[in-house]
Amino acid sequence: MRLGVLDIGSNTVHLLLVDARPGANPVPYASHKRPLSLVKYLDDEGNISDEGQHELIEFILEAWEFAAKHKAKDLLAFCTSAIRESTNGAAVLARVQHETTVRLTELTGEEESAMTFFAVRRWLGWGAGTILNLDIGGGSFEISQGENELPALAHSVPLGAGRLTREWLAEDPPTAKSIKELRKHIKSTLKEPIAETKKLGVPNIVTGSSKTFRALARITGAAPSSMGPYVRRELHLSDLGLWSQRLSAMSSADRLFLPGVSSARAQQVLAGALVAQSALEMFNVTSMQISPWALREGLILRRLDQLVFDGPLDPPAHVAKLRNSDTK
Image (tube, rainbow, N blue to C red):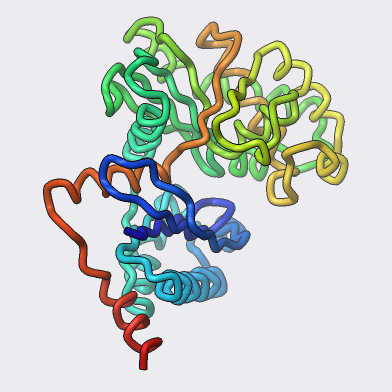
């Protein structure tokens, strides 16, 4: 069964197709994505402009065709903080559904955190014990911990790498003053959710998901993505502290020469490093393991679980329509 997940994030819009069945490991089949920072299309009142909406709708239509071409039987479409926090988010979702027939599910920050934890749990298995997972997105930072498939606690705070770069690190490279003020802001924002999470006790393992954590691990010496998902990758606080200082002195153009840093993330990788460093310090954690699975995989696995009870899926209307037109 071929399933698709359409992810409308803060930095990119991404359709991932996987071949999967209940009880089996979902295998990536194809991917279609493009850089699209919706926050760059926000006006002074926090509305996503017509231009931004047009770019979003254009990509979703492309994703339709891509899903139909590759015979996807189901398409999960969701959005996170970029639309969730915009002033006209509800109107944007309605326009998308009207013009594309695709209904974007708006995940809350806590749902995003919980589904990411779910993916990490499935990747590591029950033998991992209690997991503390951290996930740095473009607009938000998620914290979750638990000993079951879903976390006992899930937090989402506005400390995404893209958001912090726009709001706190305007210069390139940033000034020492702006970095100092950002560090203070991060620790102040994290104080309450970390204190609450610590009440659950000490986890058996600490994990980091998301592209930001993968990039930071790669910068500090972890294996490249070309070696596959089964290679153990770790991020150590001592290395992170050193590289936070180095990244602070580099321009975004210079960061492009670092391993694992793409053009889309060169500017915001420093903010991600500062969040990661502060979180590990405040949790008293010296190292973490990087999970190759995150939110998209969590939603796919959850959907597969539903199939065990609900039975086979008919293709969604827009995919079926396009598929039928291809056969004529």
